Every structure is written in C-alpha cells, then in structure tokens.
Amino acid sequence: MKSSSIPTAPNFEDMLKSKAWTADWHAGAPSLPISFVYDDTVIHGIPAEWSPVSRTQRIDANLLETVYEGREPASGLSVRLEWLEYLDYPVVEWTAWLTNSGSETTPLLDSILALDSDFAGAPALIQHCNGDYYSQDGYTPSTTALNEGDPLVFAPHGGACQFGGEL
Image 1 (cartoon, one colour):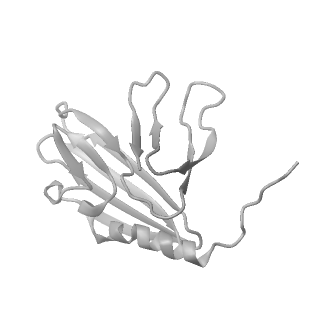
Image 2 (spheres, one colour):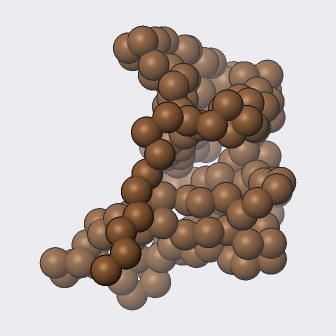
C-alpha cells in the first residue's frame, strides 16, 4: 500500500503566487471575486453604491481575517465576504453570505459565484466539503483539481439552490 504525505513546509514560490492572487482583494470591495445576477444586473464584488466597509484583523501570528460587507440600499440585500489568509502556508479560506436584511422580498438572485476568479499555472486544488446531504456522508471533506473548462458545482440534495462556476 502506497501512502502519500502532505509537505510540512510551504513552497516559497507557492507562497508568492498565493499572495499575488489575493492582492487584488485588498484593493477594495469592487474587486472582490464574487459575482451574481441581481434583478437582471450582473454584479461583481460589492458595488460602491452599496456603501461597503471592511475590516482586517490578525487572528494569531499566522492568520489574517478580512471581512467586507455592503448593503443594496433599495431592497436591503446584504453581502458579506470573509476570507482567512494563512501567512505561513499558501492557503485562503473564503466564505460569502447573501442575506435579505430588508423588510421586503429582494429581487431575483441568479448565477451566484461565491468565488469568481481565474487561476493560472498548474491546476489549483480546492479542498472543500460536500455540504449537508441529510446522510452520514454530509460534510465529507474532498479535494478537487480545477482543470481549465471543467465546472465545479455545489448543490444541496434535491437541487433547490445551486452554486458553481467554471474556469
């Protein structure tokens, strides 16, 4: 039986690539790698008219947390994007939330890409969980290589809501 191991030290070149990939995110809310269609309008990042705010804090010596939040003024749709950037490994954890914080129903949301970004070079490895499938296999950890043109789609059991994207 052949076993595989995870390197104990990061590759310096991978660290540089990781920092370069996330550098644009620090440029501001409109450059964040999220996109969706909202009331038939394509939205990238958090638009300036949504009054985005951000905060960055160091969690510990090797972990930096950045949170962006913005709210569409007419309907109250709130977007919150959070990422954890590991300073000692080329790893970024990314989470996006869309919430109706208003008192009325929001316009239709469609084609939500919580991470809408380009990757260059060797296929990126995405480590993720499969979500909750109402079974003992819910939240099973997985690693998926993203090859050019291959979609990576996540959908709950029954497909009521679908998230995904393609390189």
